[in-house]
Length: 173
Image (tube, rainbow, N blue to C red; front, side, top):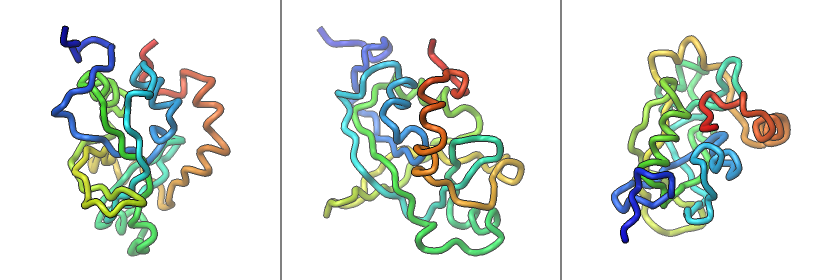
């Protein structure tokens, strides 16, 4: 019997593009909490996106991703080549239900777009994937002129995110 992806069974949609995560969702425990199931059936690979910059968001522990052209405005200077390469994870095997939950978690602050993602430690060509870009309409109000650090998040905020459901703008429970 075929499983229905509209249930919370995590059945992968064969037509679902992989997704690139560059912030809090890089952490498997946070990803599992958002989609409400173990990540054991997902394929999670280290990856990078180029031509984009990852920024701190005012009053938040999570980042926003902007195209390099918008990043120049946010930084008040051209971004460096290093700042225009963002490391994250490419996640395959997500179901339509997973994506709906991720969309709800990201909320109106983000817009999903298709982008080319480079797998790290691979000679494969770039992979087309979905990525959440920070909404242009609120960039000037919320984006801080500094780059977000995943290591800083892990060291300073991860334990709070794992322990406290109020850290999530969206929570399934």
